[in-house]
Image (tube, rainbow, N blue to C red):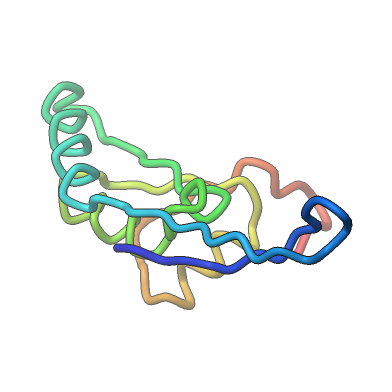
Length: 104
C-alpha cells in the first residue's frame, strides 16, 4: 500500500513550497509479524492495536491483514475509531480504551 500527499509549507523568503511525502506499508510484513506474535502467544488470543489510523498506516487494511494472520481482537483509543472499523465492515471484537461514560 502506498499513498502520497503534497503538503504546502512556507520556504525561504515566505514563498509556498509543495513538499511531497509518501508512505509505503508492507502488508506482507504486517502479516508475518502478526503471525509470529500469534504463534508466540498461543493459546492466548492476540489483540492488534490500530488506533490513530493504525499509526497512519491505514486502520482498515492493517486490521484486515492482522485478523487474517492470527489476531482475534483489535484495539483502538476512542469509540469513533471502533465505529469506523465497523463502517469498514470489520466485525471482530474491538476494545476502545478511552471511551468513558457519556462519550459518543
